[in-house]
Structure formats: structure tokens, C-alpha cells
Length: 341
Image (cartoon, rainbow, N blue to C red; front, side, top):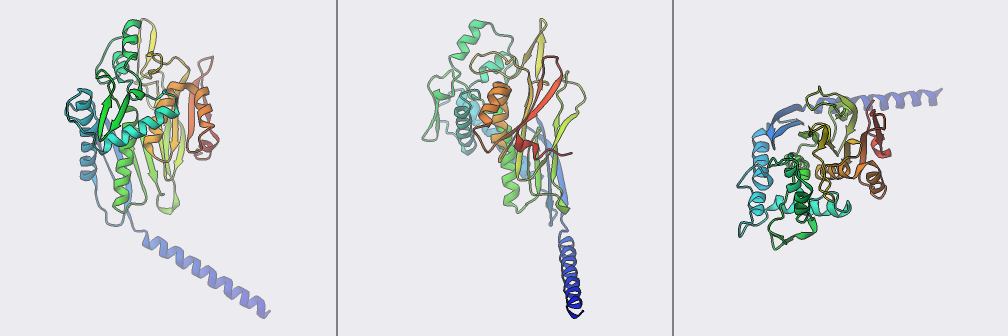
């Protein structure tokens, strides 16, 4: 009986201690949710975070994204990358250009050139890039293919060296993801641990919401028309992870009954024709997720799955059209673990 009484007393003390610690945790977590949004890189951005001091970092984030555009935006004539493409003398690659170059080369090598940051002229020629072209003929494609090869570009002594001045560099397939990483890095340097950064649908989430709730983001259902209402195919829980999506269903045009996708195969010079509609990639950082999402859209499901089988730091969610035209999904085992109900 005495032992039972001691056991009950200890259990009650432990319960009181746990409840006290829980109340202390709740009382100490008096952070305010801060949110702001804006425009960048021709799209939207959205930032959520929790902060004890209720600091608003929108001005700093706007400045950071403005500096980013002045480095690698093709829509800014005076940007570093625009000047490099014009072959201006004495132009040095800044920190952002150098980082994107190294990351792009790594992904290009890993994907056997299905990701290629020199494919820009072909994207333009098909009407999807910085300069709007018209459907090119085979001779024009052959001429442009001669200048599409990431292996003909190098970074030496802080300068981008091109084997031919006609080669053009376009980091758009990875830049948006990298800008997400820059904003995330800024927030962490301010002591922010729990946040979500979304730039044009490329997302990085760190930590959790108060109460331990995860950040949840949506994966869009492919639409038959670019102006169709947006609906979700799935939702994913993110914690210390990036998600980037690439798709062919909103950027296309139809000419003479033929549908042309904005996803251009750097090997052939033509838009891809396989049935993959969308791919979402999970990675440790958003630049990597963004780059591989682009590469997988070019490669198609089968090639992408073979590559994923050799990599342990990437997961993917595919949406494709079957032989009857119905939408089907396929995802890796690791991606399944983050799918929300």
C-alpha cells in the first residue's frame, strides 16, 4: 500500500511537471505570424514567418530580389547576365551568377544535358522566351543547335568564357528556385526558424507552425486550358525542404492544329512530345528542386525514374496523360511520405 501511494505521488508529480512545461512552452511561444507579398521576376512572391519581435522584412526582401534581377534577369538590359550575353568587355560574374553557373553545370552533367542553360535561343525561337519568335524551320533549328551546349561555357578568373560569342546563357530554369533560397537564407540570418517562402510556386519551408503543425503546399492539377480555374491534385507537407514544379499545361500554343509546349529538348531543338504534364520535385534546396523539375519535364517519366533511382536526395511526383488521355499520377516512395490527406 505504501509503495502504491509513493507510485501515485510520483506519477502525479511527473504529470504536473509535464503540464507545467507544456504551459511554459505555450506561454513562451508568443510569436506573431508575419506575412507579406509582392511581385518579382514577372510573378508573385509570398512570405510567411513567425517572429517574437513582429519585424516586417518586406523592404529588405524587395531589395534582395531587386539585386537578384540586376544579376540574372534577361528582362533587365543592364543585368550582369544580359551584358555577358552581349559579350561586353570586362564583365565579371557576380556572386549570384557564379553560384547559378556552378549549380547549372552540375545539373546539366547529372542529366546528360537534358538540362542545359544555353537552350535560351531555341526557347525564344519557339515563342516562349525573352524574345518572342515564331515556329522555326528545321534549318533554323540546326543553326541554333550549334550554339546549344553547356560544355562550351566556362567560368575562369571570375569571368564567363564562351567558346562562341553566339552562345547565350539563360538561368531562368533554375533562377527562381535560387531566389527562394536567397530569401530563406536572409530570414535565417535574422533568427527566423519557422517560415515559408513561395516565389511563383517554387517553395521552401523551414520548421513548423505553432503547435507543431507542418507547412502544407498544393500541387496543381494540370489544366486543359491556360485560363482554367486552378485546382489541386495533391498536397505535400514540407519541413526543412523545397518543392518546385514544372509543367507543360499552362505555357503552350496551338498552331495549325499542333500543340507546342514551352519545354524544349536541348538535344533535338524541338518541344517535347511525351505525355508528362507536370513534375514536382522535393530537394534540400529550391534551386536544385527547380533545376531537376525542368530536366525531368524534358526527360519524361521513364528516364527521370532511372535517374532518381541513382540519387538519394531527390523525390518526385509525376502527373501524366495515359493512352486514353486521362490524367495519372506516379510518385517516388519518399514523396509518398510527405503527401497530406
